[in-house]
Length: 363
Image (cartoon, rainbow, N blue to C red; front, side):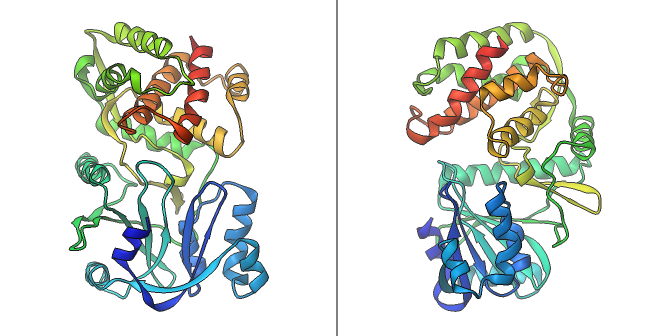
């Protein structure tokens, strides 16, 4: 990440910024000026993080406060090439804040771009050819969704490469300082997914669908699964699903792939959804709700397989359909296996234990 920052930012001059992180290995770089606007990039799920977001814009000048969150002070500005590109794109001087990315093989830099209290858009940066492919995929996906009349999604402003070799993806936003992040499932999410299905539904032979290709990739790379899951179980469940749908014409539709509170916000009672890097055109409808549920259960409620299973068996969890949840779990297992490009080891194995236990409960 430092390599990308060195290629896109100038650390020899500029305004005052603070760099701080959390226990998950995530780091942010926030400007002292207009910090309340800049902190819209910071979307914590824990109580401590929410306190930092609320209080740091007012208290960052107090040394003990900075010390408490292990913040370091630095000065920086946009590099000349990036500065010229963004200022020309938005027609104004651009301010920025930085999220250094979630630790993973697909880690990338995300910048929130603003002018005073007005948020202009977002810029993603990487030197990885794999992430460049994700940028290209997201660019095409958003253009396709736009052609279908889908609202509440970003417009791509730029997708290319800087002279420094850094791949760049810039998108618009309607986000403001008053935008809200909703962590509970509700009517807005329901309506967005219903509209996504209605706008993109298509009759397709199952074997020609994106979802079937996901299962094919999983079956091809079972040897890449981590040691904390049983490949034979995964293979059997995937084969059963393929047998159920084999030869059938199905009505599938677009799938966001990372439908979580931190990839959406509400502005003027409209849901705006971004980060379509993992989106697909022909998936079983409704799987995004299972991702929202699972991710918030794990990262915001601290649930494990036991608590999720108990919820599934409760009155509140009556909406969960076993086959649909199975389809979702196979998708997420396939994605996280294939994206590693090799045997999954180390910290990347952690979520697989949960997914494997849930699959066993479902079957």
